[in-house]
Structures are given as structure tokens and as C-alpha cells.
Image (cartoon, rainbow, N blue to C red):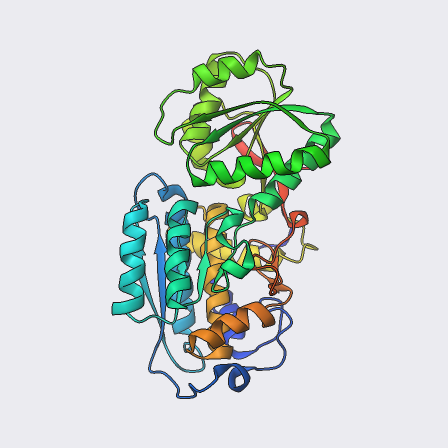
Length: 403
């Protein structure tokens, strides 16, 4: 694999994004649509205002912190390269503290007090669904970093909302494809009782029949539970050939730890909600062998140069690591892509809310991001496919691309 580009070239990369409508990052947008989409608002603004709500603190901080950092990184790079057509970008970041009530409070502040042009976030499903209601009510474009399909579906009830993470539908499809390869037909599920876990369980059940999968037992846990041994004991005697866990840390890590303590040997497959090293650390040796569907940023050095996402991923990783000294994780890609898409829409559609929404829905075609390649439409506000997910497995205490 070639040596990665240095940080200076990253600035050039972002500059190219801002001075050209075409190219890999911006998809098939070779024709500027500024005047076409801006509607009545043709004045050049003094500043483009982007509101971003992420879980910087609280239980969801392993998701929100890299999203927060990725947003800061791109704001700095963009303004260092002259902003959008010479106009600076101002990102107003807000921490929802991993709480739905705080997400609602900050969403209202960004809309009514800060009067932002577009809103990004938040990190988890429940708060994102609450923000979705406000986006619809106030008719302001929003790009979420939450995974659940319900954030953008049905589209007719989500006309102002888009999202960048792979959906539950993509993740479950990828899991069931893997199970077919492994000859697994009977599974148990253990899901968080929150919105994310409930949404995942719904899709697991919905797609089970067509994929030849029988769910022999379904157990749940509360987000703040510290031991799931009782549920696992039931699952171990259920006749299931594998366990599927749906949640975000720390719950899935506790489950992995408990499975080790109970000497359970059945395969443990989890959702893309644990795609970071925090899971491995919290599992205390129980993570070995766990398999998940994920985007490719989880292991940037393992991506082939021929992969369409190779340049985007390596550029982001290099810049993030240079600035913050840590790993962006898969969740950082959501914050990165949210910001890239917002900049692309503002550059081409101006500050009019309707024009921004319309641009995202109709003009984002084959847009290569760190998460995947996006093509939005009036039927799909996620714009990804199951094929853009890969499988990861913990081997020797590290996430490895499973081939």
C-alpha cells in the first residue's frame, strides 16, 4: 500500500472539493446548480451557518466524540481554503450529553436563535428521532448520524431528513448473508430496549423468513444494565446456533464479557453500533471472535488501493490522526460525511432551506464518502446499499477485515 498523503495535501484535497463541482468527493455534480436551486434567495451570505449536535459527553460519547472532532477538522480545513466560494463557514457545535431532552433543547436553539442553514446530528437514534420531528415541523434540512432506518423512513414522513450511517436494513442483510455462508439457520437475539435496539429487532424479524433464518428466542436488556447473565443463560439452552446482539456500548461489551464468564461458545454477531475499539476494551477479553457488519474506516490500512473509497478514507484518517492523535473510528466517518454533504449542498444551493433539501435529494449522485457511496433520491434518504458494508472480526484484540 502506498505511503499516505501528508497533512498539507489534505488541505489541497478539501480545496478541490470547494472549487469544483465534479470529482470523486462530490459525485456526479459536474454542472453547478446554484441559481437553479437557490430560489428567491440569491444574495451572497456573510457566513454559512451549520448547526451540529453530537453526543460529546455521556454514554454515547464513543460515537459522538469522533463525529464532533471530524466536524471541527473539516470546518478548519474549509475555512483555511477560503470557505465556500470565498464565504466562511461557521459551525455551531452542541453537546446533547447523550440525552433526548438536551438534543431537543439544542435543536430549538439552533433553529430559532442561531438561525442555522442546516443541522447535522445527532449520534443516536432516540434523540435523532426527536430532532426529526422538529426538522419536519420547522422545515429545515437535517443530516443525521444515527443508524436506525426509521430516521429516514418512510420518506414521505422524512422529507427534510437524511442520514449517512448504514441503516439497520443494510446491516441485517449483511449479517444474514454471512449466516448463509456459515450454514447458520437458528439464532437468538439480545437487544437493547431503547429505540436503536427495538428498530434492529424489528428488521431482524422482518428479514428472517426470506433469508431462511429462525429466531428461536428474543431477549432484551435495559441500556444501563450491568449484567446480562440471566438472559444469556436462557439463550444458551434455547437451541440457537448463534447470538445476534443489537445495541451500542457499553451493553454489547458487557454481553461479550458475560459470555466469556459463562463459557459460552456460540458465535456472537453484533450490530454496527459497536464499530470502535471501546467495545474491545470494555469487553475485557470477551471480544475475541465477535463479528460485525461495518463501514471500511474501522481498518483504514486494510483497504485496497483499487477501492473507490480508498483516497477519501486515507485522507480523512491521516488528517484526523494528525490533528487529534487518535483513531476516528467508523463513527467519525458519519460526522465527516455529514459535513461534506452539507458543504456540497450549501455551495450549490445557497442558504434557502428548500433549495438545500432539494439539492440533497436530487443532485447527490455517486457521492463517495468515508462511509460509502451515496445516491439520494425521493425514495431513499440514506443512499447506501448493503454491498458497501464489510465484515469485521476481533482477532488478537484488534478489529480485522474479514475476507
